[in-house]
Image 1 (tube, rainbow, N blue to C red):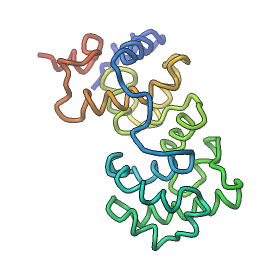
Image 2: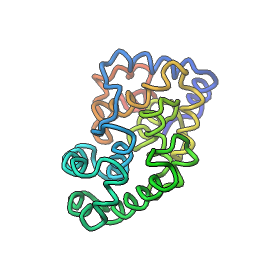
Image 3: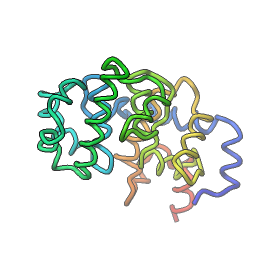
Length: 222
């Protein structure tokens, strides 16, 4: 658990967050999503499919799916039963299929087949939570949005970017403290750092570029 003393020292200004971003910027981390997509709609579908599933697993099934339904109109033509045949190897596929068909209908009828570009409109779509909405805003619409997935939540709390106990609290801390010049890339850096180095189990602390400023390493290095 991150100490309150440490949190109060570093979070009163943005210097720590900027230092973290500067370190991650030099760590040769991707500045893109791990999901394969071609536009806003395919990213939205992929992001919904990735809930409680790994990106690699989603990327295995979406090429075939998007070859027949890469836009909301074609997805509606494909239909629920056929969609299931493409996605039934991932978790919660029935519920995900239901949401994809429903949101495709809404996008066609209410948004002229275009994926909305505001948080408020995105989170009204079936199956779209705040994290998925922020992925679209960050990746597609180049907004300073911070999607908080399991990696971002874990890494942010470990290294001291936030001591928030909820996803929303961590997101607020990141919005408050990440400098604007890193707003687009930092989400991707933190995700990939969490996948490659700051893993849930057995984090590779000794090779981490942040170990000398990381509260988790400070508390566990002995």
